[in-house]
Length: 65
Image (cartoon, rainbow, N blue to C red; front, side):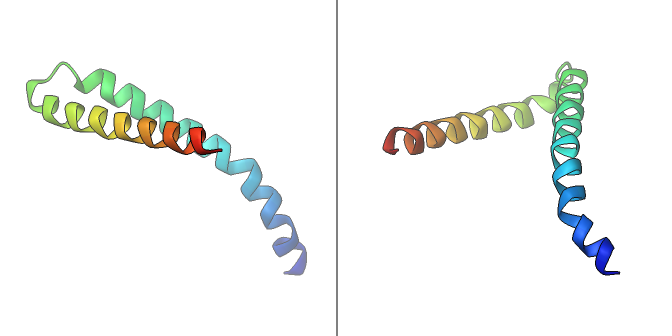
């Protein structure tokens, strides 16, 4: 039990980047497949707006450093 708990942080550090990259790739593929549908257009615009705000916020934080 203790050995399993000791190895847990290394497993998390091993899996988290891979899971995030897989999620990013699947999101990208989903957007590429669905972007041709007209009903998906409002979702795409909303996500692009949210990403623009996120980039602006990150740039603002970066400039304060």
